[in-house]
Structures are given as C-alpha cells and as structure tokens.
Image (cartoon, rainbow, N blue to C red; front, top):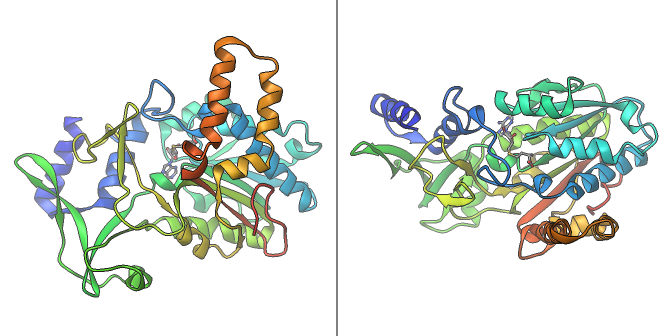
Length: 353
Ligand code: SAH
C-alpha cells in the first residue's frame, strides 16, 4: 500500500497535481501495485460481487440473447465471441455452457477475451482453457469476422476525469499532496472541447465526468459490428447522461475513500451511456434496465426450473440471487443494458429500439 502511495507522492512532487484519470489508471493497472494487476477482487471473499458471480442464470440469459441474434443474422459459419473485461471468466463459461445446445454455435465461435490484468488472464485460462485468444486492448480483436460481444462492469472501471463548471470553462479536479497524504484540488479554468455539449445542460459549479477511453472503445467495437455484422451487449451501472460525482471506491464490500489507500480498493464511476450510444457507428438499442432485460429473456421461468431441483440453503440463496439480479431496488434498475447491432438487423432479444 505504502508503495503505490509513495510512488504517486513522488510523481506529484516532480510533476505537480495529477489528473484523476492518471490516478485511476495507476491505482487499477500499475504493473506492480495496481488493484487489478495484482489480485482477483471478485466474489464474497473479495471486494465486490458482479452479476455473473451471483448466479449462472445471468450468463445463460446473455448466451441465449447472443445466440438468438447469431441465428437472426443467418448463423455466420465463423464469428468472434468476444468479452471485454472477463474477470474470473465465469460469464464466458456460462455463455458457452448455455449455448452448447444451439446447433452450430460452438463450432462457429472463436472466443476472444480483452483483459488487461495478467492475474485475471491466468484465472480465465484456468477456467476456460487455452482455446481463447487473449488481448490486452480492443484494437487487436479480429476485424474480418462478425463479432458477438458482451461487456459486464467493464466500462465502469475505465479511468475518468472530473470537471467543475466555471463560467463557459471548466476546472479539472486534480490530485495533489499535503502533509504526506493525497488531497483533492482544482485546476485553473480552461475550455474543454470534449465537454462542449455539456455547456447546454449544466450550471455554474456543476460537476461532470468524462471517460476518455469509452468512446474510442465503443467505436472500435461498433465499427466491427456495423461492417461485419454481430451484436454487443454493454451492461453496467449508470444512466443516459451523467451529472455529479459518481467516483466510488469499494473495499471488502464497503465504500472507502478513493484517495486513502491507492491500489487497495476498486475504483469505478457510473457509465454515461449517451456517450457510448453516440460513439458507435452501428445501430443501438434503447437503454434497458437490467431487470427488464433479464425478465424479457425468461429469467423467472429459468429460476423456477432450477428451483424445482433445490432445497434448503441452496434454494434460499437461489431465490435471493434472482431477486438481486432483477429487483428494481437491487441491481434491476441501477444496471442498464445497451445493445449494439447492424443497422438492418433486429436488436438482440431483451433489448428494443
Ligand atoms: N466482467 C466481469 C469482471 C468485471 S471487473 C464480471 O462481471 O464479473 C472489470 C474487468 O475489466 C476486470 O477483468 C478488469 O481487469 C478488466 N479491465 C478493466 N479495465 C480494463 C482495460 N482498460 N482493458 C482491459 N481490461 C480491463
């Protein structure tokens, strides 16, 4: 812990206050001390739990939606089945299991995983074997085949910058040093062309967030789908347009101060889906709450079928998992799904235009 903090304090002493995006990138992916580079943060024993870790039903529904979309688009004989930020590999394992019954799908699928953490790449290899191809960034995904893709809680981990409106300009929130600790500060007002559209819907003192990697990543994925067909399901917490500070640090399932223990806590921010939808050259669906998406795909029928073979604690956990994934007061409304698909194709089941 002390090491990344010392490293960051040294950096600030030499170069001055840091952008939040640089801070997040160091905290999450510094090769020696980064949060994701050095550990598996998922699950009940870790810092946070994600939908695929809550229940196999999540991956099953995603698998069926992608497989139906593949059928709707004429069952291309070879395609890329891609995941961005696969974590432990659980979601991909569930997708592959759930689609085994779909004739031709498994034979046509070439699994490609985009994962920046060497530790998590190893976990994924342990679960999924050597057949997938790993990439540490999206640019190297094949661009000559249809792509059917999923990203769950991937965009929320991308570094953001934060700006406070000052007249027609913006002051960037920066991270500086005081008394041996990291502290927030504000940069001088400057124009921000990337935020031009936000001058219309904000007031003096409002805070807006900007994720520099989000649009280029969606553009790279959406261009492949627009040109070669396919579909993508982008699932994350967030909303159509973000306003206010959504930076969150999580450690051991509790919120933490983002500056206290750099590299020791997960750092995320809400995803601004408007930015993703605007960036894609493909068509996109309406933003759909996760609960609605999963219900449309039949998660309740699936839950009942599984429940028939369960009892005791297993059954109680299973019922709680279904509720957690779908209920509006749990993940059902906070998490949203945006689908990308070719202009002349139908959206993947579960999403609508
Ligand atoms: N999708 C998984 C894991 C979510 S955690 C699940 O739902 O359980 C975020 C995942 O994205 C991790 O695997 C993390 O290492 C990866 N990740 C975050 N930023 C990344 C980036 N810029 N490039 C590639 N992978 C990234």
